[in-house]
Image 1 (tube, rainbow over the protein chains, first blue to last red):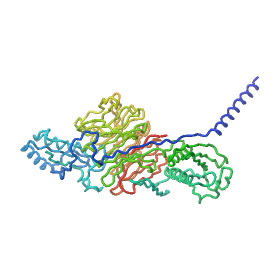
Image 2 (image 1 turned 90 degrees about the horizontal axis):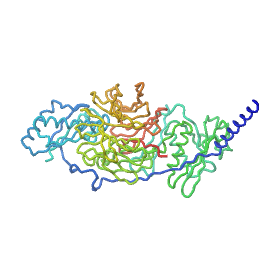
Image 3 (image 1 turned 90 degrees about the vertical axis):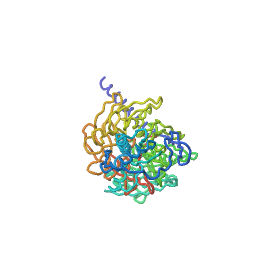
Image 4 (image 1 turned 45 degrees about the horizontal axis):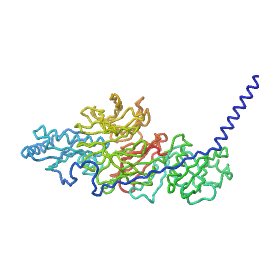
Amino acid sequence: MVSVFKITMKKIIYSLIALALLFSCSSTQVEKVSQQKTTTVDLTGNQAAPGAVLRDSVDLGEPYVRIYFDYDEDNLREDMLSNLLAISKLMKENSSYTLLVEGHADERGTREYNLALSERRAKSVEDFLTASGVSPFNIEVVGYGEEKPVDNASNESAWSKNRRTELFFIR
Amino acid sequence: MKKLFLLLIGVGNLYADLVLEITQGSEQPVRLALIEIGAPTYEGNEVIEIVRNDLLRTGEFDVLTNDQLLSIPASEEDVIQRDWLLLEADAIIFMNIQQEQGALDVEYSFFDIGYKESVEKRKVLGLPDSVRQTSHYVSDGIYEFFYGIEGVSSTKLMYVAKNSDIYRLIVSDADGFNEQVLLKSNSSIISPAWSADAKDIAYVSFENNRAQVFTQNLESGKRELVLSSNASVSSPAWSPDKKFLAFSTTKDGNSEIYLINLKNKELTRLTDNTAIDTEPAWSKDGKNLLFTSDRAGSPQIYQVNIRNKLKRRITTIGSYNARASYLNQDEIVFVHRGESDFNIAKMNLNTRSLDILTSTKFDESPCIAPNGNVVIYSTKDGNLSYLAGVNISSRVKFKLPALYGELKEPAWSPYLR
């Protein structure tokens, strides 16, 4: 009885192995190539983009003044304060003036962190001016991160020039 | 250290021809030969050349050239075993190339030199004009056979190319060929990201003089502004189920992380403090986000649970840790600044052990291949940025520098197969 059972088990196992071999030999794994079509969107012409146009993309020219910052810092440097006090005086005397403060960062570190850092630099300038009595309604801030360097080199001299805010009178 | 240099110049590459250079190869590569069954054909040579370059680019294969061979068998029956044992080859890949109505099909088998027989047969059915993609499928099949993980030759890379003040968002094959321009702009484009099904992308465009997040359908080119705001909106990341986009915005005065439900546009705010919070990256299960925050004085990596919004600090070593993403459940990859250089590092979330993967000076924008084993990133040589990669298990490094212009912000597609 026992030996018959053993033989049957052996037979089953052998036939299972044979079956497995049969399938592994005869079956060819087949896959089909897929390809994705793409469309090019060209914004270099004049067509309107779906995002609201916030400001005419006219060339603002040279900034009225540049305020420089230390590495990974948004605190205003002491040597930059006299420039800002002059701007404050000018804006308080001419309440119709509107100032655009563009924040920038050097290339070191990640683009997204630098975008946030550059905007915080612009905010520092705004905060200083509003604390000195300028109306916040006359100040716009924007961050450009490391996207618009004034000097493309990778050295401390270039980086110190790129860590900046640029102030423009836009109205 | 082994040095290999391959120059790959594509006919259709108009914007940024990629040069592939393997800067460091594996110590123990798999050695094999690629042989077409029957007389060599033009198409067969083309397929073999593409597969050969794909395998070499992993740094984990040593592909024998015809002049290294002692005998060239026309079929499996002709293999002279002794010749192959002398070459210490691991296998022969026999390829049978068939042309069917303008499409190329490739049947390939793995010939075991020790056993003198084919141990497995696979077939890729091509489409008209898909020789490169068909060949990449073969490469991925070979990679998977030997290493047990999916190859990534048939996936895509997305990146930003800058050339004389024109920015192009480009998608190409993983080897840099077959470049398609998705967006061409006079303004900066950053942070491109794939949806999990690879049908849509998101990115930041400065076309309206401010950082704004757009989504774009690859096939139709249809674009959508994700959130209209007077403040910066940036750093998009699709949830694994494609229902949400995580992003950062300064609409509350400083950079905070939000989720937007893409269907009903409902916003959920995840961070709330006076520090910079940005660069969200989803966990595979969609339950947590990694993000960068300077709430403790310097940029460090944190994790937030999107349900209860509890946060946990992840990195503590180094003055600058940013742009993290999950490699798997237990490991993350990010930009790390040690003494002075910015490198790509890997960290185990349980042991907190740090592993620096790269050695150039300005390494950033790390992005992980869908097999979780290759990291591509951007780095700089002089004033020009280019793309480079590192294989995590073999530590093979490669470069994808542009012949002209600059390449940055790489994003590796999910599997497309």
